[in-house]
Amino acid sequence: MRKRRRALAAHEQSGHARATCRHLFSSAVVLRGCVAAYSATDGELNLWPFIARHPRIALPVIESRHRMTFRRYRLGDPLRRNRFGIAEPVLGRGVPAIALSVVLMPLVAFTADGWRIGMGGGFYDRHFAGAQRPLMVGVAHEFQLLRDVPHRDWDVPMDAAVTELGWRYFTRRGAALRLY
Image (tube, rainbow, N blue to C red; front, side, top):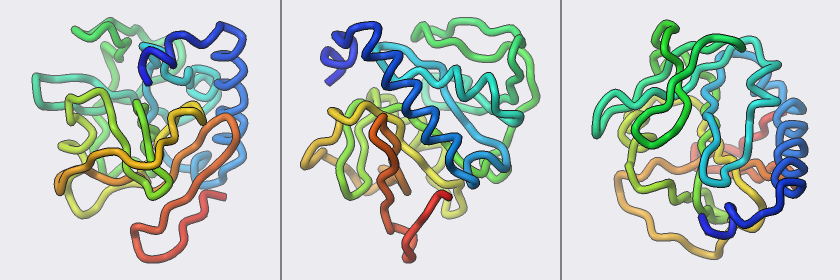
């Protein structure tokens, strides 16, 4: 999947990113509150058009081998590359998980019932392992949807996923979720 993401032509990448960001802007839940986004790498969907226009963004910062936190980010704030080559805020105040309304997560593959495979570090699963967490939304190219992916007891499931084709909702929290 990673190889397939990287192999997309530039016009396909940018077209998928624009369409996905349009879907994000169509969601009232995503537009209000503080949203955790990410800085794309390795063929992930580029969220910078969304990040540049949303007033309350937090970006992940890798603190150690097993710990990720989030920092407030405003367009123009300085960024540095972490050990994985991912841009993260240098400054900015920390944002606790409880203060986030939505988390936009990159992924390698996902399923129609809300499971995802990330890059293998487990950062999102560890950070959001508590019972009270924000809405977890996977962001992917539509071709990353698979029939099944392996998952463990400690994996944090997604509440929804968004691709260039639109929203997909999961009902893990008991009631149907709608992000509009």
